[in-house]
Image 1 (tube, each protein chain N blue to C red):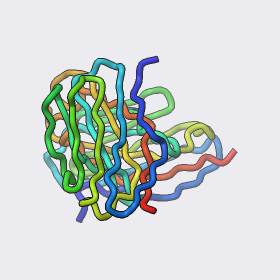
Image 2 (cartoon, rainbow over the protein chains, first blue to last red):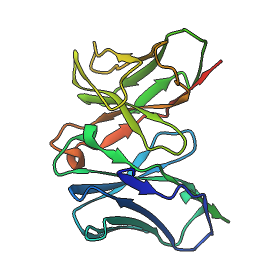
Image 3 (spheres, rainbow over the protein chains, first blue to last red):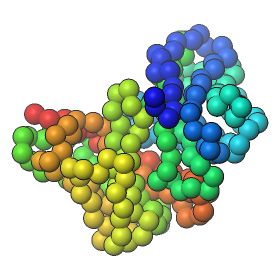
Image 4 (cartoon, chains in turn purple, green):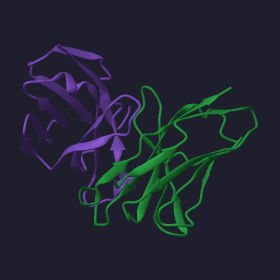
Amino acid sequence: QKEVEQDPGPLSVPEGAIVSLNCTYSNSAFQYFMWYRQYSRKGPELLMYTYSSGNKEDGRFTAQVDKSSKYISLFIRDSQPSDSATYLCAMTLSNFGNEKLTFGTGTRLTIIP
Amino acid sequence: DGGITQSPKYLFRKEGQNVTLSCEQNLNHDAMYWYRQDPGQGLRLIYYSQIVNDFQKGDIAEGYSVSREKKESFPLTVTSAQKNPTAFYLCASSTPGQGALNEKLFFGSGTQLSVL
């Protein structure tokens, strides 16, 4: 079993819809959770990060962590064609460096105009 | 513009050949990383360096080598010992800090390596 599981998609939704992207994980010690966005043939860029449980909102994006279920989500409201990309979750233990980041496989998202 | 430059964008390797992927950053970051990305797999860490003249193996270092002679440069050599080198290779650097949340990762645009 992989430490981090992420549905690879592809996921296609119409413009304006709410998108829900999810990851599950097996290591209950993970404390820091991140979402990266990767456009085709480009490097990932950090979208959002959260510490422990709870929600965090940034514009149209909301990151949610449910540590009891070992489940994290990224919601995108009012989705735009420019949101079409692969979304990677990543997580690590408390105060560990980037060398300990564990990445999901990524979910490919297409927003249909 | 500050950033990370990877070259070439596409690279082809013949059987038994060593190839070197270039990574240069002008962000003045101390730490640099090499990741490999394969379809259906998450990013996997090959090597990382937190300071000049020092580097550490990541999770999948076999068949790869690196050097860190300058702060801004971290080239990756894919040796002939790497039997399955076809992948998308990503270089990254990070801001100084303590812990992943304080050390934001910046990625280059990647190099696609294929075997002839």
